[in-house]
Figure 1: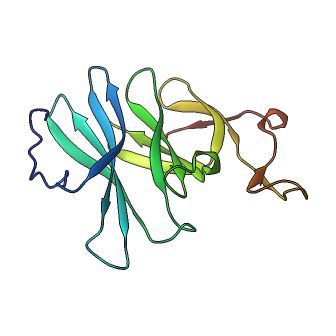
Figure 2: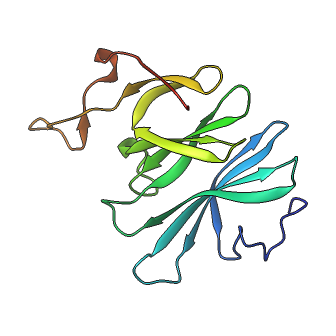
Length: 164
């Protein structure tokens, strides 16, 4: 266990299961964990936790409480910017549903702020929190297709955005 993280730490629960983990050079690590809620109405909780080398503390940045597949957001680490400040997460409706990304979540590890955009593929980090992506656009499935169906990303324009 890293220095500063004790089993009884408020940010890391004894019943938590890590489901996504990435070391961030010279910064610490980012962890996505899952645990069951103690409330019947909120069966699952997914947390994004950042362990900082400079402060030697774990901070929960975002928590998602999932009640149904229609509203669920299961985060999975997508990519880290070259300056190790920003992290992109794909948000899925269920664990193991990688083809069904709902959105992309961006986290600024320095300020602990975050924002979501419509699901995007492919996604590339630029500098100072900028990024390029193609929006994921739903379409009606054909007769012999199983859904969900999306517009071919090769036919879509490249979009640009910035964290701020």
